[in-house]
Image 1 (cartoon, rainbow, N blue to C red):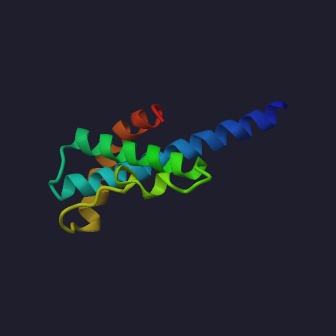
Image 2: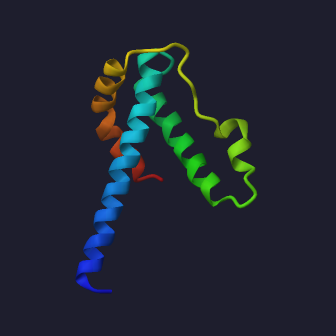
Length: 102
């Protein structure tokens, strides 16, 4: 593999990590903003959901996606997008750390 292609792979991995961290942070922020979970519990729930999503993508039978535990935890009430984004920004470092466990 040439040096250029190695850089391209590393860039793609970094981009995937950042996108996944943002998705985890946004999901967790919804749960925190609704006061359904603590920040730590919400990050854990969002990471578990992400794991199930990844497993579902690899499942040729499609059964993983139908499991109750694979369903995305929903906030109990609606909260403003501005509040969710602000909390997600605060959760990004935890989300980046959590991505490494996937």
